[in-house]
Image 1 (cartoon, rainbow, N blue to C red):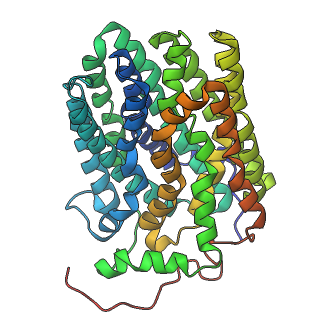
Image 2: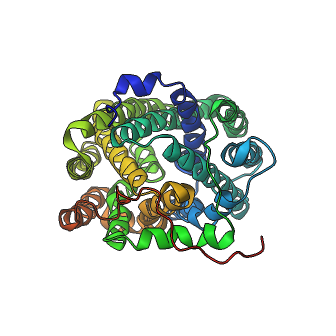
Image 3: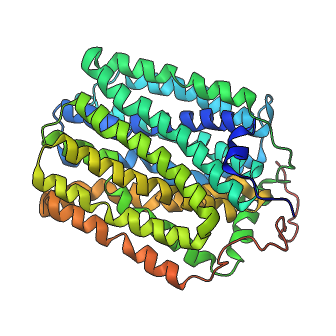
Length: 426
């Protein structure tokens, strides 16, 4: 058995650095239709119910498993099956993000919602291919955790560009030109696409093989459904304090766009990167299951720091402290959950299975967080933050009852195949 790779070995691997840039292009669009867009809407005078309801435009991230089999089955006539779809989605993303700049969110709210949904769809499609490629390239448990942390580091750099940089630009050059700049940054991911290796592998034989067998393969495992419920609940409390929700909270406390961008987002970025890498290193000693539990507890209780900020009021130190601790622990939990999902994927169906698992992991936040505005209006900010802590613990209770190898691909058959299906026309 080969020795487990170290952090230094993973970082020095030539296939790692394009992965960092790909993470950047994955993180960039997320807040452009999320937290940054919510602040633009707040600046335009829209109410909190409308702003939080806009969280529904991110629904494609939660349903990407629906079209993931098509990306597994078919290839474009350039760059290979994975990289071809990646470049295609990135080019369309550049155009769709630029299109947002021509829309007034107050005067054309529905049009803004439609184009933002298109951006989310294209971004989710890019993620499907990126997740499959990363899953296929990294196989060891230790390697998976560290590689996922590197990808998330790039992801956080994309968030840095889409939030503090974008918010600062909005105060100086306006929102329209800001979104032009953000669209142009998609060339970073395009460059990474050309340098990434194309994994070798046989695509599904037909649509039945692509659509049905990934689900048959997963759901025949012991504890498969319980694992999906766990993933659904694990990040739920964190989703209820997402950028689209706490951004307007910071505005209500009296922070300017620039202050929100640099005081909240730069510590966010640094803490998330450190937390992600630290989580990958700690997983070597703690193992997958213990890491999920410990990091999940820390992720939940740090939401109480926002309660303290709501009581104190506008305070730069309180804001920075809450952001740093929350994202340090959240970064560790993200690495653990991401590595766990990679371990659940059969290499024959990595695109579809990872899309299914990651969609379920984010579905609760995508579908329920848009109703946060109603909870905030009825509870007030202090009680709301207590509520976010409470909804974080059911997943940890479920984890205590899951079997150690629940849902994981059996080691004795890492590339097992379901029974052959009849050939059908393409």
